[in-house]
Every structure is written in structure tokens, then in C-alpha cells.
Figure 1 (cartoon, helix red, strand yellow):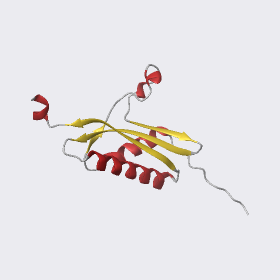
Figure 2 (spheres, rainbow, N blue to C red; figure 1 turned 45 degrees about the horizontal axis):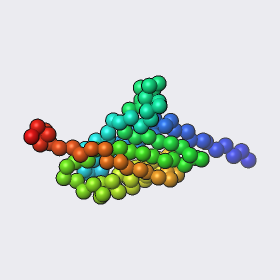
Figure 3 (cartoon, one colour; figure 1 turned 90 degrees about the vertical axis):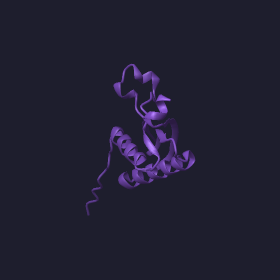
Figure 4 (cartoon, rainbow, N blue to C red; figure 1 turned 90 degrees about the horizontal axis):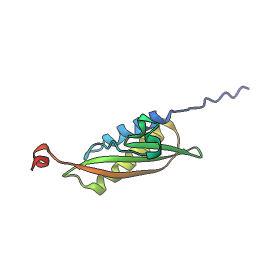
Length: 117
């Protein structure tokens, strides 16, 4: 009997894109913040300015997401929904455990008229 098991390996950039898409699916999320996640790597790495960071720790994933929320959104509710959706989507699509999803509200999105006032 031959037990050939396939091993799934997903690039960190792909996981970050999946988490970004999952976060944007939530009502109240205006976008993903483009902020420096790793200042030490910012000089060497052109991708250091991104709004999602995924770390693999002992085979499990830790995800940090920096979002922009709509002005009228309930921030606590939006953050909780982002946490839940990102965790569910990543675990479902990859089969890899997600130990934590940390959501940081990086900014609030106002309409163009409100920003000019």
C-alpha cells in the first residue's frame, strides 16, 4: 500500500492577498492601509509597505491587518467581523490553523467634501 500524501505550501504573499480580500469583504471596511510593517526591511524590501502581514509560527499562522474604516461604521463590530472572516477564509482555503488575527484601525475614511472642510 502506497501512502502518498500531498503537502500544501502557500506563499506568504498569497496568504496576505487572501487575508486582504477577506477583510475587504466586510461592510464598513474602506480599504487596507499601506503602512510600513517592518521598518528594518523597508530599506531592502519594496514590499515592506503593506497592510497585511502573515507570519508562520510552528505551522500556525498569525495575521496582522491594518484597515481603513468608513466614517459611519461601528469600529468594534467591523474589526470583529474582519477577524472572523479572515480567520475562516484562510483556514478553509489552506487547512492551516490561524492562531490570531490582529486588526488595527489605521484610519477613518471621510467623504471628499468632509476632508476639504
